[in-house]
Amino acid sequence: MRDFTGRGRTVGFAVAGTVLNDGDVIVVATPSGSAMRTRAGHGQGPNGRIVAHDTWDGSYAEKTWAGDTVVRVHRWNEPWSVWRWHDGFDWADRWYGNLETPWQRTPLGFDTQDWALDIVASGVPRTASWQANFKDADELAWMVERGTVSPADAAIVRAVGDQLMERTRRADWPFNADWDDWLPNSATKPVPMPAGWNRLQD
Image (cartoon, rainbow, N blue to C red; front, side, top):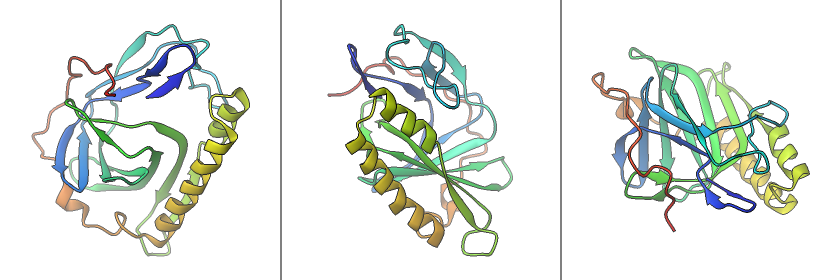
């Protein structure tokens, strides 16, 4: 979700999934073919994929999640989630740290606001193969230039990013967790988009 000038808080991106664990740690799996919704319109920004508020007509494109099943792990009240992919046989050696507001529970699932800046990691945690780097710092800078994100908010995002990067490089939780505890069921099917997906909670 994002606060678009003249539109208020609106959904920017939605993806359907199955909740595998619901407690202090939330685990959601999105199998290939699950429903997605993205803002429709011409993409801008350094990577050509941001639909800015002044070009968005309020409509959404209907898409589906492609590739392997992604499993997102979020510990309650933390400003990030960590993602990993499973191909039905084994976990991939790639990881993704998504900076975002702490998840908010809703009748349909969870709402959050993406902060653009991310971390990508690969290899085996706590071995010589383990490495991590920031992703999309250029998109965050572009948002600041356009006035979509304030310099003060961007500074907070970067500070949080440094915290997650430190945790990632040390391979602290959840990188050192037993992800087999969060294996999606082999019978898990693509998830359709539920009715009311575009209504945000107050």
